[in-house]
Length: 363
Length: 197
Image (cartoon, rainbow over all chains, first blue to last red; front, side, top):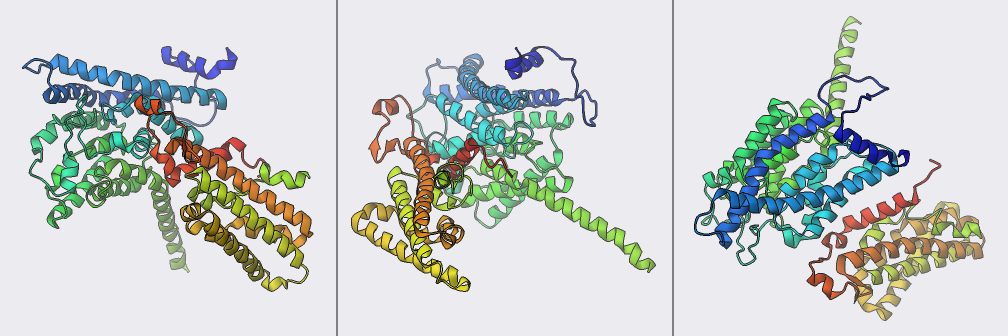
C-alpha cells in the first residue's frame, strides 16, 4: 500500500474526510479548502453545462431533423448529454492518469485542481471533436501546462485553455472557429457570427436576443449568456472569483469594441462583441482562475483590461483567428507575473519615497 | 577517450550547455534537412577546430575572434556551395540556416574553449564529437516532429493510410517551432539537467 501512496491518498480523501491537517508552516484554519473552492466553481458551471447539453441536441434536431415535427425538451437534452458524457469521461481518464502517474513519481498527493479543469475542457470543445484528440490534448495540457512546473498551484497557464489551444494549433480542422459546430451535421456548414463580423458581412447576423439566450451553435458551455451570468453570480457571491478581473475584462472588451465600431473596423455595436463566441465564458470562468491571473489588486485591473482589449483586437484584426478570447487569456497568463512584479515594485518605490521624505525635511 | 565522448551525452552542447538551440528549432521539421544540417555543422566545427589549432601559436590574442570568424566563414561558404551543387533541394529547404552556421555558438565556443589550447588531432576529434552531439539532438527532435507532424520519415509515408481513414490526423503543432522547443525541453528534462549547479 505504501508503494502506491498517491493513488491510495487520492481515493481515501475523495471518499472520506481524513483527519490529518497540515503539520508545518503558518496557515489559517478555515472551512474553505481547495476542495470546497473547486466544488463551488463546478456548481457555478452547471447552469451553462445543462443549457449547453440541451442546446447541442436542439441545434442537432433543428438542422438535421429526425426527431418528429416537434422538438421537445428531453430528446434534446438526452442527445446533448450523450455527446457530453464521452467527452467528459475521456477528459477525466486521460488527465487523471497523468496526474496520478506524476503524483506517484514525484511523491505528492493527487491535487483536486484537475476536477475543474476536466469539467471545463468538454465545455470549451466543439461537440463533435474526436475523442482521441481530446485525450491527447488533455494529457498535453496537464503534463506541459501543470505537472512539469510542479503541479496544481504552480501552473502559469490555464490548463483547460491550454488543452483547447493545443487542439486549435495541432488539429485546426476540427476547431478553427470560422465554421459553425452543429453536432452530427456534416452537410451544413456556415460561417459563425465571429467570422461574419471579421469579414464585414452582417446580413446573416444573429440577433442580440439570440446571442444572449444562447440558442445558437457553439461549444457546450459558451452559448447561453444567462447561464454564464448565473454562474458568475455564484462565483462572486461566494467570493471564489474576483469581481475586479471580471469587470475589467468586460470594460476593456466593451471599450475596445466600441472604439472599433465607431471607427468602422467592427460592423456590429460594441455590446454584441461581448455576447459573441466565448468572450463572456472566458471572462467569468477562465480569466478569473486564481492561480494564473495576476495576484495584486492593481494588477488584476491591468490583467483584465488587457485580456478584454486583446481579445477584441485579435478577433477583428487577425484574419486567421476569428476567436481571440482564448489566445488573449493565455497571453496575459504569461504576463501576469510581470504585471504583479511591476505593481509590487511601484509600491515599494512609493513607500521608500514616503519613508525618505520626512528624513530630508528634518535635516 | 572519455573526454571526447562527453559531447554525446554528459556534456551535450544543446542539452547541457544549451547552445545552438535556435537552429535546432528551425531545421527540425523534417528528418532530411536535420541530418544535412547536423553533418554540415560537424564538418564546419571539425575543420575550423583543426585549422585554428594549427594556427593557435601564431594568432595574436587581441584579434583571435576575427581570425576565428574568418576561418569559420570560409568553411561555411564552402559547405554552402557544396550543398547547392550536390543537394540543391535540401539547400533550398535550409535556406539561410546554412549561412547562419557561422553564428552557431557551439563552433565559436569550441574554438575558444578547446582549439586555442589543444593540439590539432585532439581538436579535430573534439570538433567532430561536438558536431555529432549537436546532430544527435537534431535527429531525435526531427524524427518525432516529422513522424507526428507529417506522418512521414525521410519523406516516406510511414503512418498507414488505414489510420487516416480511421480518424487519425497529423499534429499541426509539431510542424510549428514551439513544439521543437517543447521537445528539446523534454529531452533536457529526461536527461535530468545539471546536477552540480
